[in-house]
Image: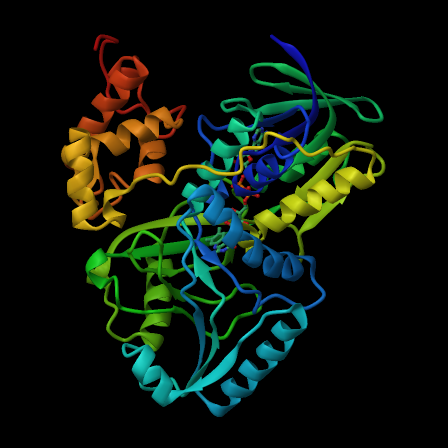
Length: 479
Ligand SMILES: Cc1cc2nc3c(=O)[nH]c(=O)nc-3n(C[C@H](O)[C@H](O)[C@H](O)COP(=O)(O)OP(=O)(O)OC[C@H]3O[C@@H](n4cnc5c(N)ncnc54)[C@H](O)[C@@H]3O)c2cc1C
């Protein structure tokens, strides 16, 4: 057991924790991030819609509304600095009647109060030209150009890599088990592997933020998981929509959407159902039927045969709004909790807010002179032109050795993912898309296992899908 002292310890390696880590890495501070899973981005941040929301369906005056609009602006600069694939594709909230159009006007007014810009109500002829697969029953829509799409896991990994390059120490497979408050700004954190001392703790533990808060005696909120089931379409339907298509929002969610994703496969969903179990990531036939019937009203040509994969995510809900505050009764403890949707969008703004809270509570922030702002963009064959791919293959034959045929992922990309931190099959999938296509890894899993085993220098019988309890190959520990 080590016993190191830090200025700040962040608990949780999702998009929020990693955004905070990268923001804090701009300053002369000793920062660590603790994550219970064997890799980062294995919590809520791996299973969401990947939308950078413009701020249209969040109440003016809410914290999440303000941080969503700020995050939507901040992500553009961060994406350029870190080579993250952000695309501003725009969204349409569709209306089926005159009454619906009146509701769109209300959404527009509310969003304008939050600072959302350049929105317009578009008519049927605009929609026919720009979104030809929309149902003929759609009579108009609110067009919000500033909505975008991003890969939520690649965003998390790119933020964490840059944070680590700037000195943040990242400890995965370190579940926080207890926190001892010795005195103001003197806290001791016990994980499954080490004991660490710190002046400030930032609780960004997603679904488990209430448990972490409880460790310092604060139990005034409870996280209720709200399940969202999502269904991915085959890439052959890549152009089924040009924008993200929303219905009018419901009381509990933004409704069931047709989503463009940064990987090309369109996606439909999510459902919104409160559940008790923080680990329940099951999908159901009922969820599928609900989603399909809702999207068919907007895009009738989407069929069940288009669906190639499905997953669930759990929104960490703690009341209506985010809870981001310094806890005066435990000086040095900052809650960043209840970060439900639009937490992915808001993450960069949450990180800035946390820095301000730290400053207001006694931390001096001095900018690093040698902060490394930029990160080289990761190469993905599926994202580049054939000419560029040919050139790369000439320079390095590993790019010509295609491991995942469905998604066109080469050996070189998988090796790079491992060099960048992937230790599991899912870690490789989230970074490269290998195993994410129509065959679900049927052809490439054994090859990826072998590459992982060779690069990490561990027996193939020790490689897991996603950490503890997910070994793939049974047998002797020989290679
Ligand atoms: C279905 C769905 C769709 C969504 N769509 C969107 C969208 O399109 N746009 C958008 O902006 N938002 C969206 N969201 C919301 C968004 O995904 C979340 O707000 C965001 O991912 C939360 O990130 P986080 O870092 O707070 O949580 P997480 O990613 O869950 O990170 C918390 C981390 O803390 C770790 N942890 C927990 N307990 C401990 C412990 N004791 N010790 C150490 N580590 C611990 C966890 O393992 C986890 O990795 C969606 C959410 C869902 C479920």
